[in-house]
Length: 234
Ligand code: ADP
Ligand code: ADP
Image (cartoon, rainbow, N blue to C red; front, side):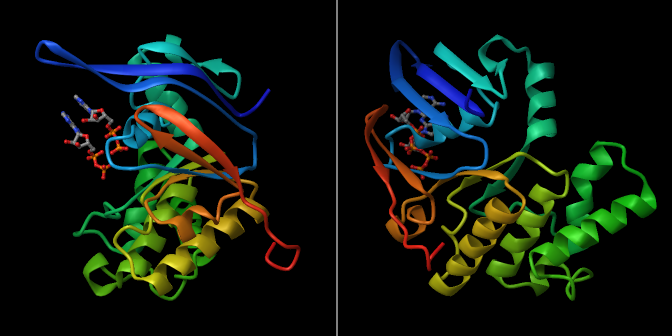
């Protein structure tokens, strides 16, 4: 059984009298340890699909099993639980707290989990070291470049040892050099820590860092593309 098993998932929104079918029956299977990308034009359903994968929203039809648990049957409390237990999120706009330094931002998920003082600081420091920011742990977000801020956000995502990272346009606000750096960090986390990664991107060269690209169109999977890589690139 795959880590994520999405079967015939549909999601419709009521917009006044009109019902919008954002997803019309999507089937996706992602194995533990894979790195995959989702692409597609604006309005094709990418955000809706990511919200479902991230357990922020539930399908109106179909099934979603995550690590053998039936997400579509869960209540809000169970959804929050599975999110905290399994997932780290990375967003286009970093979503760091501007009044907290890098270390404090990375500590936040651990505070919610009740991890105390010394261990919390140590784990946050290690997460920042893992993304190459060991020398910048006391910097405020405003003192960091966009790429560095995104690395803090990745440290915050990995500090609770997630099995899955969900990234929504993680390089959308970055230049090409910083984008490449972020993708290399994802590749490293995927390879060395076996973290499953699912990312949405508009940029083809970013999508190609995944081993497979799901192309969405009008709420359906248009086609699935397997990315071939040479041994050297791997
Ligand atoms: P992106 O295309 O960059 O993923 P969004 O997901 O924010 O951007 O929006 C995609 C489309 O969904 C847009 O056409 C937007 O107007 C529509 N949309 C997003 N949220 C809502 C909402 N709450 N109500 C109605 N339409 C929405
Ligand atoms: P994408 O992320 O690929 O841009 P979305 O998942 O945001 O696509 O949107 C898919 C479709 O669902 C669009 O037609 C959008 O307008 C619609 N939609 C998204 N969110 C909402 C919402 N909250 N209420 C109504 N319609 C929405």
